[in-house]
Length: 258
Image (tube, rainbow, N blue to C red; front, side, top):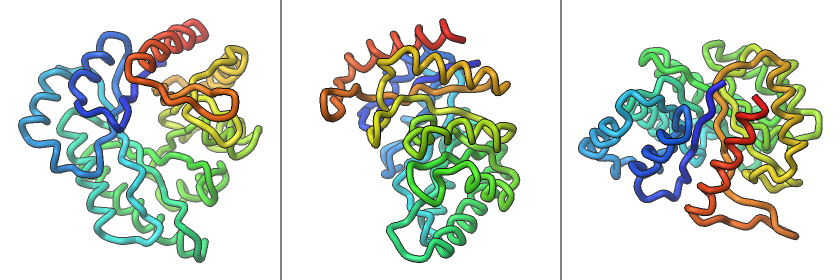
């Protein structure tokens, strides 16, 4: 399995993040901000110069709302994926949208329409589209993602471990059992209750998750998506250097388990 690094969306400059990933990881997974104008042709060229064949994956910003089926959000996601392709990405994760209330049927219909159009764009451009499970209904359970796959057969799934464990203690295993053959990527991080994107501080819990992944037969990419640690009552946000120290340590623990 290949282990990847995800920079913070708040990183002002991706170039040093690429250099860090090349030193320690097998690939980098990049999330562009929603203001795509900051990624000029010159900046994209600089990214390519530093990457120099290093594997990169795309992660479309989760702020695009597909629950209303608005063309501008579809277009922005497609444009983002097109920019990822320019830096060598051949896989890109997209988040479905849970919406802000209203008809669940309409939310599902609009997601299928929007994600279907994005998937078509990906097929035309040689990019594998991956859809990530959410923390909230209607895209938090394996059965719901299975239904989405049946509607859009070309997509694969990014299994977010923390999101699955927030949904229920059994949902992670449900994903492996119900749609394991359609899992094309994994986001790995801990959760404690509703708090997620945490570093694993319980090595036994991490070991159990890695064991289940290996047992399922999955043997592809895993991105460490941890940004904070759990304090006594709530998460503690980490500075850039502190986070990097912890992520290197967690990387070593994961590689030992693999």
